[in-house]
Length: 425
Image (cartoon, rainbow, N blue to C red):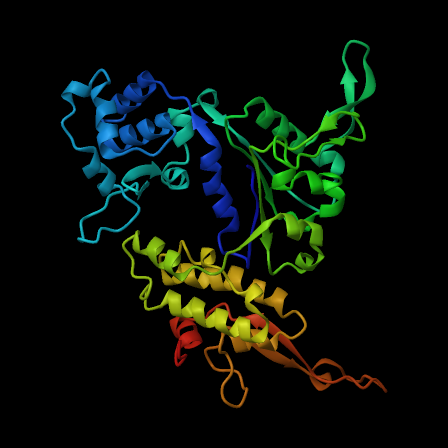
């Protein structure tokens, strides 16, 4: 039976990243032994590469013994004297509880004594991995990906009348063409023994009622084709009978800080599971530790305390839907990186949140003292705009003074440390 899920949460909590990981569940690799052998011998007998390609060939997680048996069956297997479990551990994503060394790339994960690959980490390590070792001929994608936006309509999603050029007559014609949803439904129907998926990023940015149309009922899991409450519908353009296959998953993402979240159709809410994704401090700590850095002391900055302090203040001044996710800091390696994140990403986001009261940004960054005066090491500064300083005369206009806010481009470590210093968290 298919599933309908929406991952929702504040910006930077890894929703799109989650989709990229889920894609792996809907991807098959057709890799023959000769491709694996050639890649292994051509790349100085890299053991991690050999094992990665074997797991991809299998399209399922494998035990160390299964991997060894596969290697033994290959042409060079009788000369292979290494233990796969040692290599899997060496390149494991998870840190060793015994303190054993790890080596790049860290791409293998273990679950129930079986090992699988984190494809995103492979691509982070080698952007050309797929190009170098696999071509599109060896990859079967059982998914489609679409991003909703304000101009996305039913005709894009299900079917619509589209123009085409007839080269035989050199004339323009019109025909009914399938949209992204009907295309993936056809693929799923033609392969009933495999799972397919449609990934919808920013699902709340489109007019959901208009885009789904009559499909809003058909996507319910118990009303899919072959289920006990099966329902079909006649499509408006092609007049074809249509139902949603039960081997299709519909998976979306939604930014909870987006004002359009309140516009989500109640019918859609009833038909989807909503999975909340919030700031994952543990994931931030684990990811940074994999690079050999201490997340609590990156050039003197405790990144966890920094992010947690900012989020607690945002939650107090706004709500939990507007906190900042771990993704903003997940690649920092130095104070300069942290400074760039604050200057180029965090402060502009806060300016959007507090566009009608910018002084609250100074509260979030702890830039004001007990008397609500600007601290000398403030990150978000202001200057006073008064009529006396700006005009010779304003006649009878009764303007009050205003503040002009800006980022202090020269803020230092102390400016960042004071954000979380003294916080009882």
